[in-house]
Length: 285
Ligand SMILES: C[S@@+](CC[C@H](N)C(=O)[O-])C[C@H]1O[C@@H](n2cnc3c(N)ncnc32)[C@H](O)[C@@H]1O
Image (cartoon, rainbow, N blue to C red; front, side, top):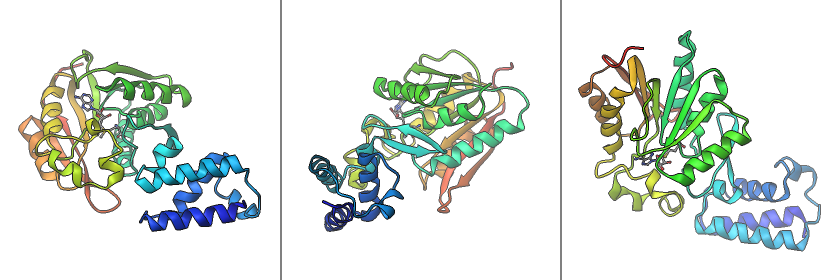
């Protein structure tokens, strides 16, 4: 079967099961299977594909049709220009989270010293490792409660050749004893009752432990903002990703907990996406 025929068939199938970007999905999955770039298809549309690969491709398109995200099917996702391995034990890194990383990167550039950074709920390592890769003299500690997530974050560090990351299996701060200039987190923040209403890609395939933020979605913001005070150096930064409608509530939580210069910033879609603040008090260096 020729590449163009295989792709057209897959696009049709994905349209029939209402996937929003059928051509892109079909091409990305085939490119990954054939280990080529998508551009390859323009020049090689008449190339014949071996029958066993065609069969394998059909299975993969079937998985996509049932709702499995493309990133889990191909096993990796680009984030901050780095290629992260992903699997069903971790949240797929989102483009919106790059806003949080970019804010932290700019904040570090303003400081002249090397910094100690803590990433709580690291998942694949997207946030912590992206920061670590840009500041090789900084020390980044990546924490997750999920052993599988932590293993994957370590694997990503090895693959990306990032040497300044440390990995700690911990329920938030429970196994942490150092002090940090920056604590960053994209915690679970979906209100528990809303999870089932999310698109199937998220509700069925992404790990519940990466989504569930308690009754109102704010459990982790309350816990981290309170407990972080013991682990942040004076004047240091707490930076959160938030849900689009949680900006004011998270600002209040930070203000109640003695953070100053508290503000929210928007993502490229115009939604509130991050809240940051600096600790008024806290440990001196
Ligand atoms: C929304 S995901 C974020 C993953 C990654 N940082 C990203 O932005 O792509 C939240 C992560 O927090 C972890 N997590 C949930 N509860 C935790 C806890 N009590 N302590 C530490 N990590 C936790 C989950 O396992 C998950 O990996």
